[in-house]
Image (cartoon, rainbow, N blue to C red; front, side, top):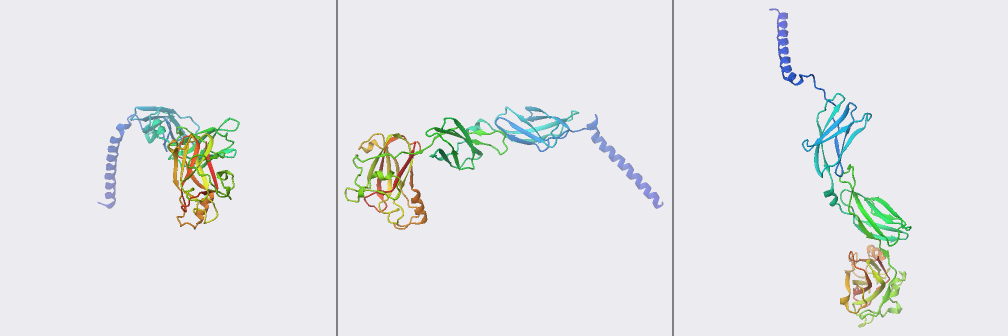
Length: 396
């Protein structure tokens, strides 16, 4: 047989095999399209779920050939239908599903075109937040809230995970209510034109996720803005209070605003033996928050040395009584030299700390007392006299 005949025979065999193969493919495919070829609508492309308070928002890229969407969750027990309005070309299509219980969900989305054809399923997971999450939110903690001239200044600690801002409500000098918002990135909040003595309320705003559609709020807290208290009146009539002073440098000098002079008791043993105490009368029960005292500064002989107080107790009472059992001890603190170097030497940090004053803080929610009693138990050089420049007390 000639070569051309062999080629023709080969082509004929190939044609028969190809026909048989196509027939088998059709036998597999045709039963599923007996009513014609299946047409699918465009699916919900780039589907995402945004969390909310008892709700979620589902978003996907707009497809001009779709007219509605049906969304299922909880294995089909939940259903939500959404009408797709025309004209959102190049934008996102979105719908909100309300009334969901707190928890995690998977949402299955089917879209439909003008002819009623549905898309293939698109799925995405998301969370719904509610009362359980809300009850877990903590308010941002305050370091201090202090009146500053005509304003007030709140100093904050860091904020919890998910916190985005604080909302502060206060009264201005006219009595009107003002509400301000500060991001948690700010460590201070300024209350301009604050009405002295009025209560400040604040709460912290949270987003459980960066793209959440709802903001959650912690339970509000109230805070009182502390003020620098008016100078109290020294009292030296109680047994144990020491009232002998070097060159008339009496307790009133602690409140004269002069940081270049000092109060000093008389260094005469045994009458001046430590502990030494003195009493201050605030004339009305007062809540103290903190105090700051200044040692004699600018000299290695007097700063963290000599007669500067090292171990201190602060007591409070509403009765001017010699009996210490009628008093409540509020502070028992040792002053620590920052550098830890021996007496007579000062580092830059020692000097800076002394210049700022040594601060003692009263316990949170200390009761209101009329009388404060200062007791020096030990001085830095163990001398039986006490020397300080100034004493400033804050409270409400």
